[in-house]
Structures are given as structure tokens and as C-alpha cells.
Image (cartoon, rainbow, N blue to C red):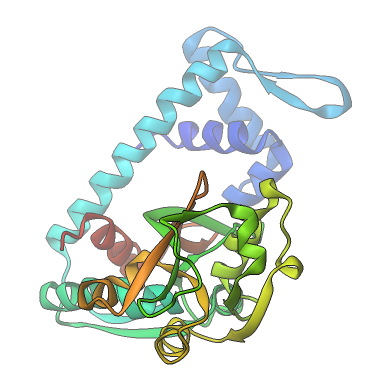
Length: 298
């Protein structure tokens, strides 16, 4: 077991607040102070100094210890996880949630391999848009979520998963754009399909357009649809429209030559997919699945 004093120091250094650290660690504030003073006695230097208005700052020695503590705690966490994986038979119900794009195109092959390795774990997957998955996590309907979009909730901890890119696509029969690439400002003249409010994709698009002084309200939105499959089907039946879709979601259509990508000069919408959890220690099964997913190879 690692030195608990390092855990105390790490929490104080991250929060820069003794009261918050004591609440997070479930120990008294005097106990927090005692552990810090013991470390300072061991290393014969001051680690934390108080400034005005009861604020605290790390000394150079404190900053150095934080750097090492971060690495040490990560190693201990890896060791504990791998020992449990070796010794324990994993059983139970894993309650996870995935935003629509992830649930349809990213997670299924991961779940298939996960089930082959951990046959006694039953998985319940909840699907919704990013906002719905975040709310499901906050309401404790799930223990782990995987979403796209911009970080929103301070109650939620976000871990980058894999990278994705949103690209402008249309039917191969679409003749509205005859050039190899368009300028960002030309987006305002194209009939567009967008995802519904609350969608992570919609948030990411709005964020990417800001540097070009383009708002969602500036676009010619023909319709807002509640799923990628609906948008793809609409594009295939209406050769005039365009849409921003995840590259992960159109691989089959690109291969079949039914949809095509329209390049936009000096414009890219790259986004990470995130694992989300409530702050604190993850239960064993969600931790297991997150670790497995990050090491998954197609």
C-alpha cells in the first residue's frame, strides 16, 4: 500500500484547499495538516505556503513532489488493477452509456471482444445524445459514459478516449458543389442537415464555426434529425443536402461510393471522444471496461 501521506499531499496540491481536500479524503482538516507537516519533516523543506486570503500555493519543492507523486500514484493504481485482474473472477452487471455515434459505430466491436474475455460480466448499454448520457451519469443510472462534445459539467470527470473528425458529406449524386473544396463562408449557402439540440456533434460544429464568425443561425438548416442513420438516409434520398458527420459513421458509405466528402479550406472539426465518470474512484467493472477499451485493437 502506498504512503497515504502522499495521497493527502496530492489532493491538497490539486485542490489548493485544505477544506476541500479533507472532505474528499474523509479525514479532518487537522489530520490533513498533520500529514503535510510529516512530509515536510521527511524532506526537510516547505512544500506548501499560505498566501493572502487563506489561499495556498506550492513551493518549488512542492511542485517537484507533485510531479513525482502523480507518477507514483499512477503506478500504484496500475499495480492494484493488474493484481485484481489476475486474482479475481469478474462478474456482475456493467452499466454504461454511449452517445449515438459511439454506440452505433465505435463501441460494438469493443463490447464483442470484451464479452469474449469476460463472459460472466453482463453489459447494459444505454444510448442517447451527449446531454442525455451526461444526465444519466449524474442521475446514477449508469456508472460510465462515452460521449462526444464539449466538456460541460463540473460534477463530471472527462477522460480522452479516441480521436474523431466531423466531415462535410453529401450524396455522390449531389451537384451543388463542383469544386474540390469550398471556403468556410460558403457553408452559409448550402442546405444543411444538423443533429438535434443537446447533441455533442451540434456543440462541436458550433464551436468550430466561431473563429470564422459563423453562427448556427447563419446556416440554411433544412432539418434537424435525431440520429446519424436518419441523416445518412436523408442524404441518400435528397441529393441537394449536406451534413457534418463523424468519419467513423460513413466508412461503409465511402467504400460503397454512395456518400462523398466535401473538403473545406483551412477548416477541420477534430474532436476526442470522452469517457465520463463522476468524481471519485470508479467501481471495478467500469474501470475494467475503460482500461480494456483504451487497449482495444481492431
